[in-house]
Image (cartoon, rainbow, N blue to C red; front, side, top):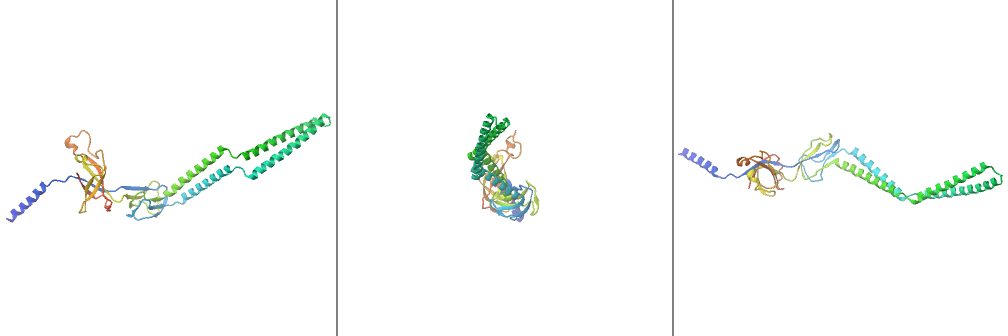
Length: 315
């Protein structure tokens, strides 16, 4: 009697389980965006500012690289900017009053020499006419007069150059040199700032590939972050359910190890199947197509258990 009752109960359990409708599910794993922050120079790591597993905000300092060489480059660029700016101001201000006064004095001196040469030339010319001086003396007086005239013209032009101010073209060249020096300074300052690696997004520090004191190679990751406050479920949607879903839909997510499900929202849906040929498929084969989807969990879900299996209930 007891044996018949046992087998009757067991049969009833299997019958009820077989009769219950199967809830369609998409299978996958719990994932989170990984962000790799790389070194911008071959420099020694001087500080790991936070421990592995720390929660960080965007802008928090994570790693510091040796910046002494780059700091010297910034100082040189600052000096080049100061030099270019000083040269521009010098050209804008024009000649100093002392230089103008000196040029004016040079004009007056040349004018006095010219007056003396003119008087000498007149006297020698009269003496030659009276046959009291030779032709050679007249030639020397003529040459001295010509030289004195040329010196006056030269002194006047030098004075005009000082009083007219700097040419517009020279000012444009000097201004362009200032801008070029400032651009180089900005570039060097950016390189200096990049030697202090900061978080580009909110998240959790997952790993430091390099230890403090090691020389990181340029372009290699120095920090691996798990971005975002909560992970997402990466699952594969069977083809018959793809058309029923859209970005923003709320879905129930079951995570291994948790008694209660979590409600997430679809943040991404693939338009093409992740695997299985998409061409020449009959009705039976089409049902095997799988579309990759990502279901974002709410921010209240703070567990970062990446890689855990998940099941998402399909509509």
